[in-house]
Image (cartoon, rainbow, N blue to C red; front, side):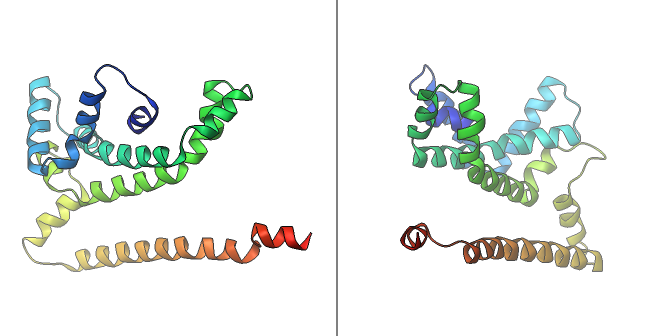
Length: 191
């Protein structure tokens, strides 16, 4: 939503402040983000746990997803959406049938980026987690202080296998689709 507002929102009061607030997590160190979120949760009296970890990770991952979505919308331009609206589609229909499918690659890449950053983050999670709430990176980091265990090696192997399988699938699916379809020019010449 933030990327959509920044790309298609036009000029509105507070646009520069909104853009700056969205971009702040991109430039702040993890220690500053973690400490400021900890102080916010303490000031609000929020009990720290899995919910605060989720809110903290969502707050800093939002900036990365917004940048990806804003970039995709800037490349697309508004012409397709305007054409659908000119043909009589309501704004909700335009969004659901035109904008959202065009944003699907950006949303997927933003989700993968946010997931990777969240999985990698130990500093923010250590600030905002409460007693009994922990994340996998925090557990791994605490275990590595004592030396690597077979469980750590097994987990690293599983993570590497999943990443390799995803990369192989990302390479194989377009390659298979490309073999079954002829280019548009070739279809037109043969017809």
